[in-house]
Length: 110
Length: 114
Image (cartoon, rainbow over all chains, first blue to last red; front, side):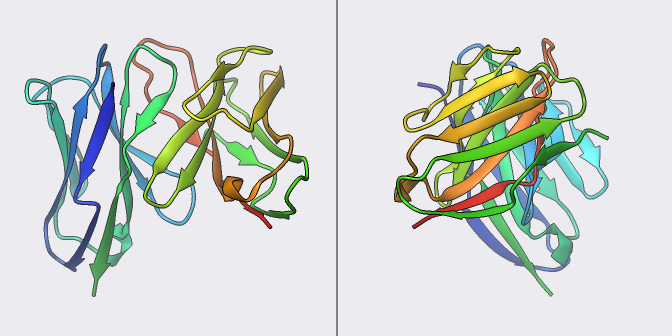
């Protein structure tokens, strides 16, 4: 059965810390892995990863996919309180829909 | 910008009532989805539609039905609401494509069934 597992489930850090969020997957017909950020409302898209070893960056956020070891990481450097959110990992395979992990809840304290 | 609009942000209903959740997207997307989100369970797919009048069951379709009469609109129907359907409901849309994993989400509808 296809699945995606995120770790840790929750995390509390201080402003300025660097955090690494993990997402491991077991998926047949894998196409892509996606990261979303969810504050109190709609999840917003961060990254889509299809190729192994190619880092994607957006400001202080970056992500990379390892298709051999079947995982992805999301890094956030110099965290700010505005980074507090639930971070969702999801995979796309041969179907139409995305299949989500349970999320990592990140709290950044001042 | 893609806009996915869910008509009701907060609803309170009684057990046994029929509930309609409406979702409209303005980007001419072929695919539309309904997920529910619960603490500790993440997002789970209820139903999706890849074309007008077409629908497919997701992982948890029991107790729900859907309607897609127009391309831009996808409705989720709870025929007889129950307390275990208290949840956050998220609508999403995406365009057709080979590597088009990205979904665009609405703001969510928080349903409480008493």
